[in-house]
Length: 278
Image (cartoon, rainbow, N blue to C red):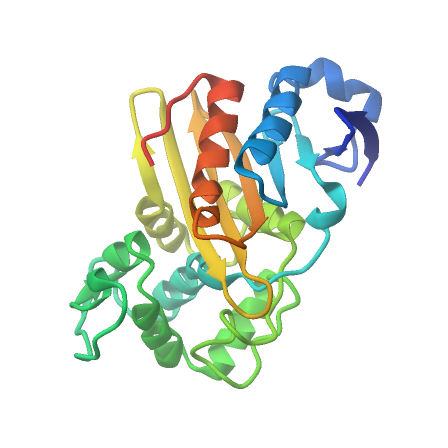
């Protein structure tokens, strides 16, 4: 992958081509979103929320990407609940559930999030990030099938380990922000090893906001092993064009989790003049 580095406001941004076959000199001419004002907005948003992290925005139509904090973008982290995207794909493809609206009965255990304490479908479990539901899906999938599909996708370091129902939360599975972008790119372009029907169902349950102008799909995550890490990843389709984003931050205070979405909202406002309702 060709890289061109530039300093802006004393922050390193890596501007890279999504395709290895393009010339780096074409980048600034073809991009419609990678402006100095956008770069300034990303910098100021992280400073305003006082968090450390990285942000990646990929314009698929122009095969261009802007990266805030390029070094962190290559660092591996637990995926936490962002793994629910792949878990959903595998569960549907293997028949762990028949469709995104099949209900699984709550086990009766009271958990600290009130919305978790009831029966759920994959659709509602994605919306409320219901951990027990996705642990049950993983158990139904089984260790062998899970590793087979994670490996086939090439998801992060592919290390599913022996604990089938928590390896994405406290196990050895790791993924970099860059790898999250590559995974999402394959999801958008439907180049993952799953049926179009399976991919379509998962795309549908990821929708967080939708208007006549755009469709916004996303998933948050919060890794609590060691340094707490917050994720917010997904993509937006505007007039038939897709823009992938990955936000990855350190969580050190009670205010930090909100920054996962707030930073994304502020950046999308600058880039596309869109007020996301998320």
